[in-house]
Length: 312
Ligand code: HEM
Image (cartoon, rainbow, N blue to C red):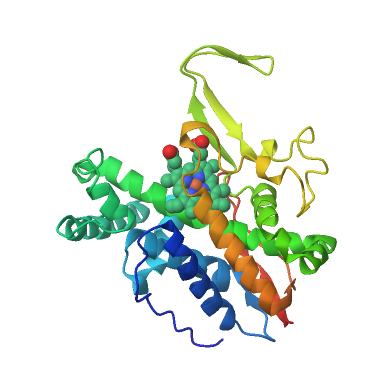
């Protein structure tokens, strides 16, 4: 494996448009340093690497410590109810999450004494509604973890899922080689096919009838995004990745309503740029072994995607 020179960006972005060249620069850096001719885990070297660099930028978090964000994100969803693993040491988990809280309190205090910047911590401090968020520890850690998990696992698993899907459906990989202009639509289709967040739950505020079923006020309702995205009434051949599917953008992977994912454009941008740069370099990212999945009923995750690269 080549030594990766993950240098921190010299110019910090000031808005979303300025993120595009930064993401491209990082995607290129990651792809150019991959080991051609060797088998390696795409999840570690590409999916996690790109999303952790992005997260560090979004938070203004120390760049060289960015893998801590990945660790905390994984820890946040590591509870027995979600993973089925009852051997998790919950005291140790709590202590480590407290370390995350401490690191973000420190960042918060630093930003509070600085002029406003284009990062999420700075934006929260300089907003009237959220500037006192640090006074409520549960709200503070909950919000930070939501942002870390939201920006991390989901995009990561879409990047990994895309490679798995294109290998599973080689006719679609060929379609992509013939027409890389399909990438934006393919990104939506990958996010549908992968469905990185399996479900969310709501509590009904009023009685309602939905699809012939009565839901009473106070009922807890689980919204299975995975099932919605496989609904044959909406998506023909729903289990298949079809990169030019006309209604690919009709998926529910980002949720809907007031809580619809606030990072959806950023996630799509990362995926689009990454695939644009992959197609400029590699004929095939070939899956050469078994895919190892994450035991988790909330995040549809992938741990290991063994691949070999075939340059153009
Ligand atoms: C493919 C990538 C992504 C997927 C599939 C995804 C999925 C989701 C889903 C299903 C929700 C819940 C919607 C609901 O409750 O109705 C959500 C909310 C959220 N996402 Fe994402 N997400 C992705 C990327 C991102 C990124 C890159 C960020 C950036 C930090 C992000 C930040 C958030 C936040 C903060 C919320 C909470 C919004 C709210 O409650 O108002 N997500 N996301």
